[in-house]
Image (cartoon, rainbow, N blue to C red; front, side, top):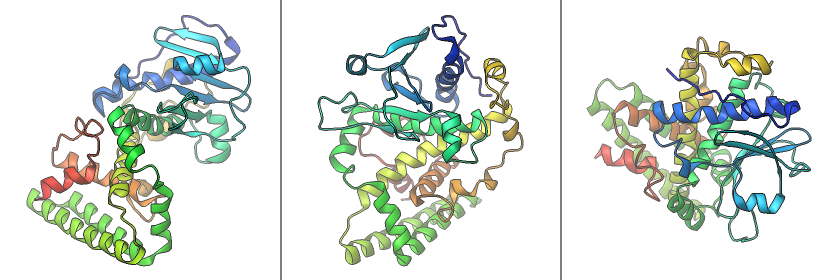
Length: 340
């Protein structure tokens, strides 16, 4: 059972914004149970990431870095134990929607230079853009997905590898290859079909055979990509597949655990958008095709990466303690090793 730690409001410095504080506490309260039940180490302090929460007119920052404090001089408006929330005098930017982890590199004056920050819009601002986000629980799964990217990049060696080897090949280029080249899309869809069949296979030998077939298909596509487009996409595809596949995995595991959770008493009192997990009561992965089908997801590598994590789970492979700590290790590398 996923038990969420709810921060009690021991110090209220800005009561009109209590809903903001309760939601931020809800996000931080999910970290220990995620670390226990879904991804070990997620709640370790060394991997903590500051969170910037945007309303329509304000910016709140949870546990900012000393450089952010020096740069923006925000006011402390809430504190409870290790959680400190600050507010800037004006909104940090005019961008209408945030849901991403950002960092810069090569600008020593930037507050986020080689330092990931989680940026998220409030539920109210989010559902202006993503119409089907109707509850705080659905919103928080989006936040956790992005927050997990912060966890990934707080592994310094992994961040350095990403900056040095991958960052210049932005992931939208892979999406463009899938959308613009029928042969590329057809191969990707076949690869994902092989992964899905491997998930359904009745024994380990059949599973490994299908994984081997997946890699044969992938090898041919990458060779064709190199020959036709003069592009080497191996490192970028492997990295983005790992980044997005594991973040989607953590997000989806919350869906599975929410039906078994006790309601958050604090949010029941303060947040009219909190539905006490009612919409997750009859949750079935199969209904959410966008999670695992390349034809349904915004970018194919989210689905292929997610399906790789499911296969590794099925085979009982202990991969979570290796990823991100070994700088250029990818889900594909671990899957390939067990298919031999």
